[in-house]
Image (cartoon, rainbow, N blue to C red; front, side, top):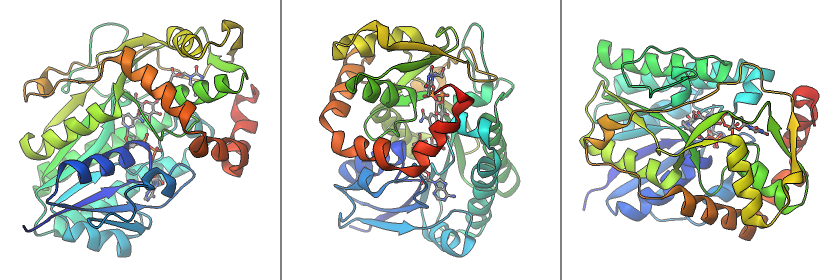
Length: 338
Ligand code: NAD
Ligand code: DAU
């Protein structure tokens, strides 16, 4: 059987590592190459069980370094481009790496994609944050983009740049805009793993503002299934929303986490709000559902299972929280509230 050459950028991060694992399991004809810079968020441990898989190659490198990333793109049939700086709070404190990696890094990959001879799919992983806050209703793929924080703006730049390489150069680009993911190996600066791991240790969970902001939660496995479908059945030049359909207010999410772990609500500590904090995201997913996708993981079960996963996998998160200097330095500066 001849193998399909799949390049996954950012494959040592949260969603990327879930995708690499599921791709190797689901596609016996795929050879997966992970290209990852291993920033604070990218970790070899995230791929511990597939690092030495016979159909997996790991390349430690920066997407901005065209000498490394270019040939990998040129050899690929499918590129799934996850690599990015991803944490909104960090982008508010310092946006430079977001512009460099998310915008310029995407540009470097797209230039290589123009030269690629066998490339049949370039998935640009964008985000629902590009739509900005939506007070009511649900964002459709054709809606105006109104990003409101430096992370979201850098992703919007990359999103439209990728689209332009389809429109101008016929690069087979598909843009995906997913809602908030949850699942194993999510860096514990993001709200679910942060609150779960704090609660396990009986330390306060810092809830921003009035806690009434709404996010739509999507299990990483459902996200990966959507990407699989789009690689085969999506149309070049199109944008697809990927949303879990689970709108939850942060304060309710927090109560559910504490209750699952048997911890008191008194751990909830209101702190200063995130500047420019988007109130609500919500996606209309009818376009993707029209291709046959539907989320498989109910949020009640998925949230419980993932809380249990963090409880059972302290080996993974405790070293990050206790000894990673980048993590500790970041939290010393975070809005001065912790
Ligand atoms: P993450 O922060 O966990 O992982 C990002 C990965 O990219 C890390 O492994 C990091 O080392 C790597 N990386 C960063 N800069 C790089 C560079 N210059 N060269 C090579 N690798 C580099 O991110 P995530 O939460 O898994 O998000 C993955 C993608 O999905 C991002 O593009 C993000 O914008 C998008 N997204 C995330 C969510 C979410 O809820 N997490 C939702 C929608 C879209
Ligand atoms: O919507 C998709 C986006 O989801 C992705 O594009 C981003 O990469 C990803 O980080 C995520 O962004 P959010 O800002 O929504 O995720 P975060 O986990 O940082 O915050 C979720 C909500 O929880 C948000 O309303 C802010 C709030 N929050 C977050 C943290 C870290 C708190 O109340 N306290 C906290 O300590």
